[in-house]
Length: 623
Image 1 (cartoon, helix red, strand yellow):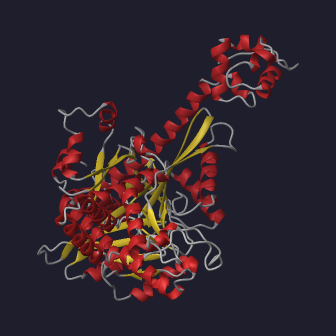
Image 2: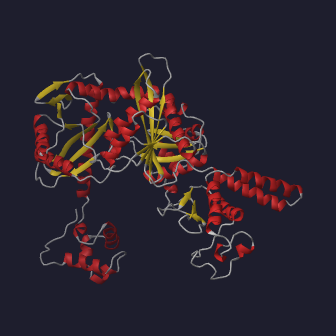
């Protein structure tokens, strides 16, 4: 459904971040651009020399998405956050631990300092940033010390007051000298408050003052001094481009905004809700939700309805939710979310500053999705949401969001495996797929194998909000008829879980023919989107199971007798085979010769020697 040529035409000439996905919907590349339109189009132009790595990457791109920002600097920080979060395959050159600098004001000290910091810590000090230029941060810190005469030493004040002579900065009049006792704590803290106001963005007066000094120095032909003032002004302006993409605190936040269609349809209209996810103060991703709302519904009503539906189904609730506009039932929803989180949840509506700007950025992205992707999303909804609604009608159910399908694969009982595939809103959620290697069943017993898989799935302890087992399915789909359905119902009854279960029944030609539900086989229209969805789910569960089984068979076929020796991994096995060329030669080698092999030590050499010289070792083969 994603036509790359058509989507390229919709790209905006705006700065932002683009995200490339492969056919399995995995993120394979994240990049930033001054102009998304120009940059993304370059990947698909055959006339350009893109290099071997990019050429290979382009062949794997199935679709792309993008997030617009207000500046290239914001795109840079967002790109870094997304790469660190998702670690895309083709971003190898950008996978480092580089962190952007902060300015730290040690407000917990009696006489605070202004320091350069590489990370934000929970130490009750004030942090400003992050910034993209370390040099500019250092210049501004130096400027603040000159303007407001704050200390830079590491002395413990007031304990060390008067114990030593003041430093050079005091004599240069770049520090008021709290270590000498010449300035009281109240007066010093007034200067610190000026520093904080400056770092909060109130620096126009300082720029004007420096501009006057620069012009005066230039008129007096003191060009070196004028250049110094010019550089300070540039540093201040770089600091002024503080990033909205990373918040000041380390809290978890969701930023939510809605864009609504202004068409003249009398019954219903389109709306898109955009959600930005901030975790530990960093934006790690986003998602958008396409809605149809009644004509006349306000943005406040849309957001209120969305909050209740979205957070009823998500396992994680952040400490703070920032909205574009206020909602009538905000206090009630706050109370409900706080109960679910077991901690206080705040819904805030920013009116100014950085928080207001990032909510505006979420709205801008929602508006662009609404304008650019309306028709494509409608077609896709027919294949996904529309198909799910058809399945709901066939089964007499409502509220189907998450469906899990299971399948068993083996060859005469050899290496039996199970697969779990997940579809949410009619689309595969591949990050939640899971494989099961059957442990308790010997031989070709699909029913017993399925019982083990389902028991392990529903008794697995969740490891957090992103665990595929954190959410229960709304419907279980079994690859088979009455027998598989009864196995699933038996497991759920034993565990005290109520989930609808239906079987995907195939005909003699191994094609889907209907659904088995509540002891009745329900025929389905083979020309419907619902039928195509069930077929896709059934084929996907089978494919995923077969691929896992095939991979295990491949590993068994290349198994070496060396793999059975404790302490001998792949690296040592390869080193032994490179030196001795055959298993027989390894068997005949002495411990000393084995020790001299690359990556081997005395302990591992003894393990190999003892393995081949045990009294019960009759013969050695390598298959």
